[in-house]
Image (cartoon, rainbow, N blue to C red; front, side):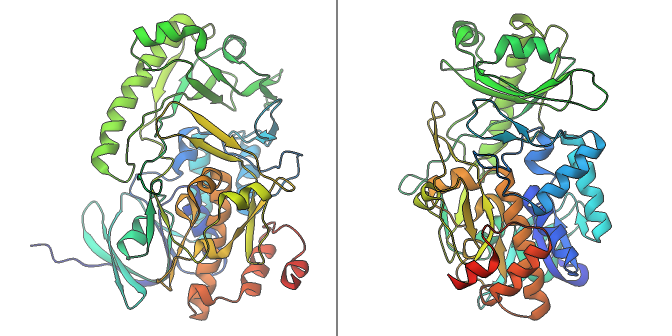
Length: 459
């Protein structure tokens, strides 16, 4: 019989579960506030969707005003220096002002180094199993590493798992999927194509003007982002068994002249929090992308010599969201809402991949093109020392279509990390953390809160 002990004797100030972009920013932010911080990741690498080749959306409003700063911008700046990013590139005739492609491997390596320099303890291959939650507090979490089942203790916890795994285990109230049906947006898997003539590929596939950028060491600007549909090949793709529907949309991005990251797969009716369903999707999407690669090599100019590498894991758009002290709504996005407890802003529009797997919907942000993210949406009900960040924050179904993207996830991650550190250090419940103290710390870290802080406090 298993009798788990303590994995690490130290009681950490902050424990962050999940090392995607939200968890990375949460752990970095907490450590930079002086908190003893541990970061758990069930995979043998960090980075989440940024380590798949998925493009980061978006730092700027439709009129080109940048509202995402802080750690998100610092990471991009570091990658630009290394050739792993090309900055924020305007997207002609796009649904957003600009896109921010990053190299998956350099993102993973640079953020690993940043966490190490900040003194964060990273536990790879360590899965969250359960939470010991009593009297409205999380006291410790049960984790499983390669060699041991054991407990980790912390004063404050951040759930950045995407699926609200820690909040679920701690008994926090949750919404799973769409209200009334439980339906979820489809899952996808990224694919990298190497040895590609990206100019020829862009000419053959792009249906709208692509985004071009200059790459250090490359004479001519390269196409770093374009999208379209496979409409002209509907019959071929159906016969090859790639898709079961017509007019499939795809998106590509890159920071290299001879590689493309393809977002061109989709699978409906998958619960990304269910390991059996996710395993089934991994098999099916890997096969789908292998077939897509064979199609591209045979039928599309620019891919004749290419090799295709489906990603190692499935990207999940939606599973659980906590019920927090405030639920950010679709109307908040439509009007570009402002809140006195803002911890940052988002500017990516509502992007819904409908659960049927065959249609999409976009809703633009109202007002000046940005919406506030309130601190209350990071604070689950009934658990005083737990915060959430990233995909699982407290938002409605349609608002989730905006907040689930990586740029707002990095913003909520940084805010949760700062708040968790301050709560642990001052021994106060997360919901009772003085708002001015949190906002001052975020401003000092370079986070943008919209209007001047004095105006917000006076509102």
